[in-house]
Image 1 (tube, helix red, strand yellow):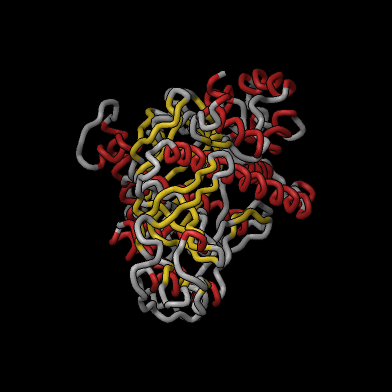
Image 2 (cartoon, helix red, strand yellow; image 1 turned 120 degrees about the vertical axis):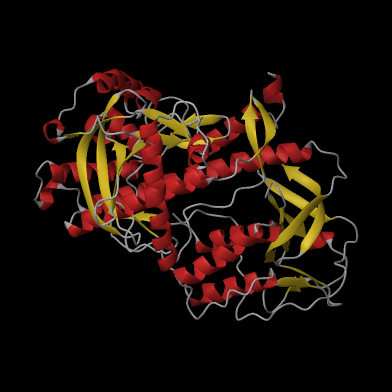
Amino acid sequence: SDEWEDPTAADALLERVRVRHRLPLDYPAAVLAEVTGVATARPRRGSGVRRDLRTLTTFTIDSPSSRDLDDALSVYPADGDGGIRVCVHIADVATHVRPGTALDAEARRAATSVYLPGWTRPMLPPQLSEDALSLVPGADRDALTVEMRVSTDGSVTAADVYASRIRSDTRLSYEDAAAALAGATPAGISPEVLDALRWLRTAGARLGVQRLRRGGVEARRVEPDLTVEVVEGEAAQVAAKPSNPANLLIERLMVAANESVAGWLVDRGLPGVFRVHPAPGPEAAAALEAYCAASGYHPGFGADLTPLDLAALSAQLDAAADDTATAVWDVLLGFLGRASYTPQAGSHFGLASDGYLHFTSPIRRYADLAVHRVIHTFLDGGREAGDYPTTQALEELCAHINTAARTASQAENQMRKSLWLAELAAAAPDTAYPARVTGVGAKGVFVTLDGSRVSGMVSVRELSGRGWAVTADGLALADAAGHRLGYGDVVTVRITSADVESGQLELALDGPRTPAAPRRTPSARSSAPRRRAPAKPH
């Protein structure tokens, strides 16, 4: 077809990414043969001790395009001491997807749902992930509920986990929830839901205050101004939707639920699949400070970077909210690195959490499903070590899902960059793009285009002058005449080569090929970071 003859066609790009990362289109026949039975089967365990919460006002908040609704919310008004009880209900996938089945084997193999522009590959077949297990309004659903008491100072003073039966009253979009909290009256929001939403806002605000005390960053990242999506088989630029207060509310509640379940497991001496994020070492703190200084910020880190240091820098970047701050955010998150799954409970530096795991998305992540199974075993009376997975089995599982999570992330990043490069390649050859330097290496500097946040390299071959080399402080390239080009510099570039399939983007400075004039840069205690790809620490 014409699409396949055009290597930049969205469908062709998607197929290349899918094949490269070995992402299957379909599910094995044995899996599909089990789906109908699983979707219609009665619960085989735990139903006798489930708490019936179907009369409790319950609702979901998610994006309008989401189909796999795995979390719902309820809340009890403040008690005499001001404590608010928040219930986070999570789809009880473990009751229906059983070990030893073809369905479970395929879910474990995939380990995560994959979301690419124009294509989604759910971990569980759509008949389950989007229907039978999804917490859709008006349907009775099995759930695991974590009930947390949020005190007036924002601490969670009590938490319990139990099997439940729920019925969602309504589905809200983030935009509808934010509008309702701002005083509007979107259609379909009952007085009971609105009242519950307001109590949840108070609980979320309290959790936010507590987060400020301990440091770290909110579980979110700055998004580009523009993104490229696939619309009717073609790539199209669309304005990125900004985060709103409802997004932040849900993130705070989900983080609190994940922390509470981690503590619940540890308190009972139970195994689990935990999410850990180590603190950067002293060299990392020095290198990050050097980069920030070159970009106009003085974080003043000590010998070791702490969560409170991170929170203070985050506040400065949020207040600025300009292209420089955005570039610093990208480098900061990439420099902090990814969190990982492990059987050993540990701290999460990025969230300033003593213990963390993933519990809230078992439809989308196998790690959450594994945690749910441990909880079910305990609720069903399991008290012997032999009732639970061995440490070796959990180590093997964690290694597998870490690899699968990286693969999914790499596929998404490659697809988005390829779509952007296809758009950029179609522009006039002399188009100039504002950008800023976000990386330095011996072969050139890496720059990130404003707006799209696509990164590419300006090779030393594209620079006039001789003897370009990395400076002693690692912050810039300098030539024999003292001209410098380094971290934080604002430049204008044009595209010299855009390889859509590989994602490689080569750039040149627009105008003079030699930076305008030498400049002094702040001294640094160590070399600047070389890692450029942003990563989500949570």
